[in-house]
Amino acid sequence: SSPRSIPPSRSTCATPPPTTSSARCSTPRHAPSCSGRPPRRCCACNAPWRRSARTNQEEIFGPVVTIMPFDEEQEAIAFANATTYGLSATIWTENLKRAHRVAHQLKSGIIWINCWLLRDLRTPFGGMKQSGVGREGGWEAIRFFTETKNVCIKL
Image: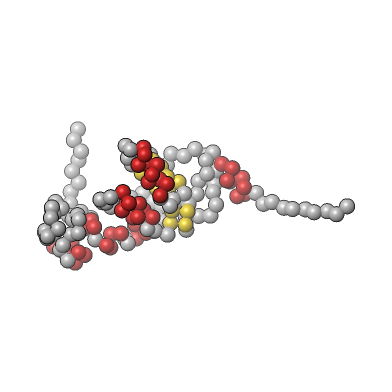
């Protein structure tokens, strides 16, 4: 079967992206965000407010996903790291070298590659930055939940 077409909405342009930098966005509702002149893609997708939207900056626990177009790998990494949180990240790619390269640069406590929420409880789990303290699971959990005490006696 063929993929379903996604109808235009507030998050996508009703017209295809312009092919030249001098093209004007023909969707009036997007004009205030980019003055009608898209830098690389349709202005609705690349507008600066998209990068700072609450859904892209807050740690939301719920069935929420944001999709942001990017042109270069480094741009995607910058988008992903441009938040004060870092619980988890997901990378979808067919290129294993790229997966390792990008995973190394992401500031997240757990990174899933071509999957999501697949976890071995014997491995550490926890976030970076403002996403939690310490790790759960594995030897990290034993250290985290152990309170050591030093008792010294002179005989």
